[in-house]
Image (cartoon, rainbow, N blue to C red; front, side, top):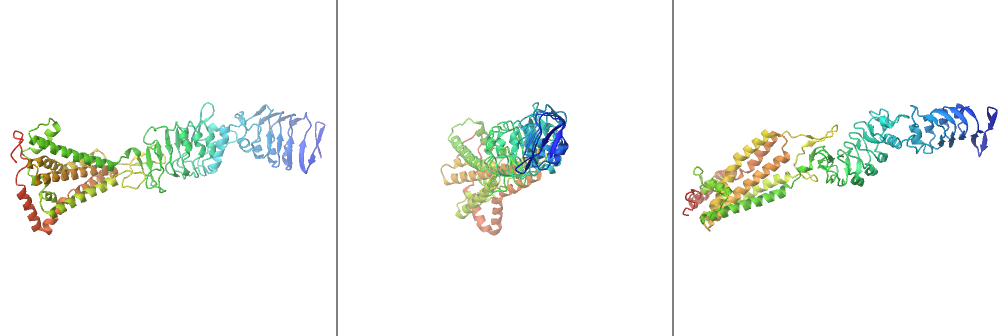
Length: 564
């Protein structure tokens, strides 16, 4: 068989059973579309001739073709996208200066640039922009066929900067890839690391699976990363350490594990860095995220890490402070008894509380005639046991509330997460409805219920030295310390527990009432004893009245040292 053009003929050459077709040099005209019917053709070399016109797209049907050499001709028009089917062939087109893209630009078909690595323009960033190839891989691996919106994506000749969700800089480098809620599935291609100018990567609220690309740390310009509300698994790549410009990172709503490396930036607000570092978690241990501004749990409830403070350790410090304060008050009272002055407005105030004529300062009244705390003034062993039992029960109850109020993202506590981070918003929303009116009611309840016991406890401590070094003095001192301390513990636990769990005014008042009920256990037990064992109770109270028949705090400012 021979083929003739302008009286120049060439023959098919059969070599090892394969067909090769070569033409002599100097041929002109258009390349025949009939070449597309030679399905066994493995080499087609038409180089260094004068072929003009368009490249026949039918050549793309030559699935067995290994070399297509059309270099150094005068071909015009656009490169047919059908050549992208020649995945295993060398496609050589250089030397045809009149070839242009479909829209008269120097862009080769996307399929040719992405599928044919032996295309001689493959590494030419003008004909085959490498970021366009990377985006094609991202599209394919993220189930691009099923995207809700993919305007312009994987168009053979469009500039990738015009694709939906893509934004480029003046050099046509991709700086933003935003495909929120776009129906992405599959996985995030590691090709995203090729977009080295990328500043914004938003893929939240999709159905992406697999892990975060290991090479994501190569995106040194990345400032905003949102991968939240997907189905990502695996650990956080260590490359996050390199993301020094990162100002927003949303990783919550996935099934990630491990530790988020410490980030260079501190973020711009409380919604800057979010991960699944809260409890309950899908795993035994939540994500460890030291830099996160907010942690979420598997129920999609979130709270800021700023809320973390060691309430238990602080409670110990507070109680030691209270004890030191009370001992200082007792020492000051002792110094006044010995006619030593202490120039302090605080102790003048305390002295004033204990010397007001309108307030009954009888020890029995101060510690509470209707409370088992008055048993501390008794000499009855059983009465002391009951008083200490109630004191311990109240203290333990308040400790339980304090422990439950601790915000520990690594353990389940009573703490109610205050924020919700919705799928369609960059910022998290505060769900708490507690307002100023609720806190005003809270303060009123505490003042009404606790002020009397705190003042009376202070009076007892102040008045204890007036009995000298005696058993009565220690009884009054201990009674005052116990009364003031348990009241201070009630105040502290009420504050921290309501901060932890109250998210509405009703909850705030309800929780406060429950906590204040604990402070009434001493009075409730007294009422119970009055019903169950009135005779024994009467004997105990008469003993207290007989021992403390003197008004201890009836000291006026003009007579600060009355006889004992």
